[in-house]
Length: 443
Image (cartoon, rainbow, N blue to C red; front, top):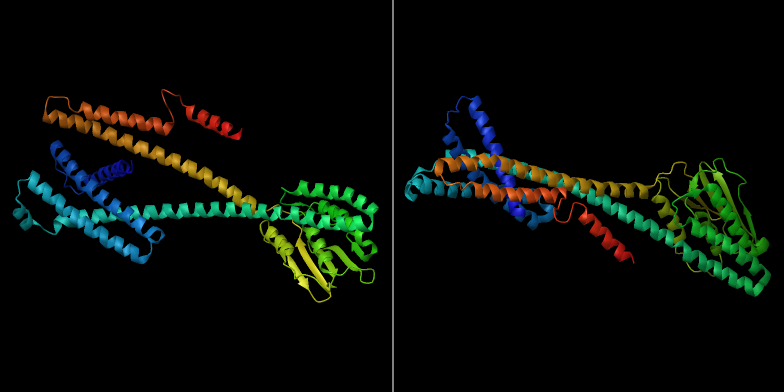
């Protein structure tokens, strides 16, 4: 299939070269040929073009396989240039040898003695120009395909990363909440009951926000208030928690459960006793939510892994260019998280790019299929009169019908493949079968 596809391209290039040379000869006043001479010249032109194109095309695909992504570096390009030049010269030598000895009654020695530089000059220049265009087109296509692949990778990576970061929250939150509940059951069963009721509300919020990239500041602050009420059931007056009654823009967005992680970290890494109260405040500052707590580290505590803060930073990185700022001066630990007024998401952007790339790939493939068919059909239309003319000047037997009908059947099959038509199964058979198999797999 690949061979015939390249052969069709070669034939088209040959027709184009022949037409260009014909126009040049006509404009310069050197075009004085009969119909038979034109046909002979066309046949010679196609022989040269087909051989030179196919030799250089397969040499190119060999290099592409050999060097892969390094083909367009200096060394591989020099190898390609020298190789294409030598292959072109060798091919021209053998084509001339066959033409001269097979059709022009030259002996091999006569041909060897008649070789002149002019016999190679024009053919070599044309072949190298066509080869250069071939390389340039393939280079452009490879660059475009590389961009599409990069966008796909970015989209898949960003989506997977965002989902993984969100999924860290559920087990982490539940594990710590159950630890609190276990302590309350031993110390204060009534508080444990109230804690369980409140925990169900909190966890409902966690589940509701699981698939969201951003939530409003108002929702997150309400959740933080409920969450801290659970914490205070255990520590009672040992925690002093303050948050703003209202913010300037309650519809601004933040990453969901970011406050829960920061509040949890504050309790986890500091002493919380009646003598050493933990003060946690949430304020609004320059378009950010500022979460602060006094530093009074526990005497015995595992070294912090920083997973919670890293989680927040990474999740914000996926939705905005604005940074999460973390400061510590020995007395106060503070984290400033952006309040977003524009729902700009890198995940959505990359997902949209991925979907757009998929649509582009599908459309590009369809266009290439249509272009291939139209070229195939055009070549067929050009060759039909050629076959008829050759049949007319050669013999009275209508042998031209065989290639015309046979090739025509191939063109018809190509058309049915490109336009999705099947006279036996119908145009929509493939879609219906795919849907049927997909539905079967879901059961």
